[in-house]
Length: 185
Image (cartoon, rainbow, N blue to C red):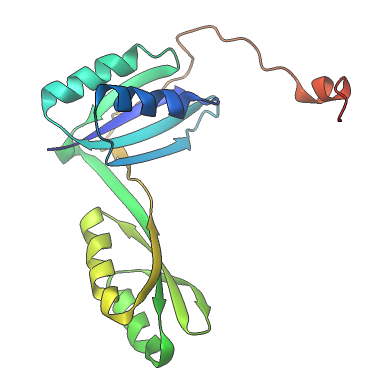
């Protein structure tokens, strides 16, 4: 069963490597990973999707909680959360531009680049919608595509918010003062 784990971490270098390394060392496969800053720039939110049973996810969460940079963890309930991904799809258009644009409109995909004989579309939604769009565009000739990892939030008033770190962290050094004292070779 697909599980979505939302993790609030310190926004600092190396945290992604430590979290991904934990999954790797334990032999867990990450199906999707997305990281972005939260409403508080001190923290980032990781959304990890993986296929696993409840006991495996419980084990992953216990291991994640041991990392000092991890501030909060929540397994999002499948029926009470919203999840979306994004894809960019570049298609050969040729003389069928109008037909392809109408087809993309059915999926609410937006043409973000119309250059020469190609069209590039931006589409967001659940993975099934993205895969269906790619399947429809495949006969037109997909030049290239890329898809993001899923991002997700729990529905309703529930929120995974961290106002303050559970640890005391050293202050960030003012880089402008440090650079004045450095000599470039």
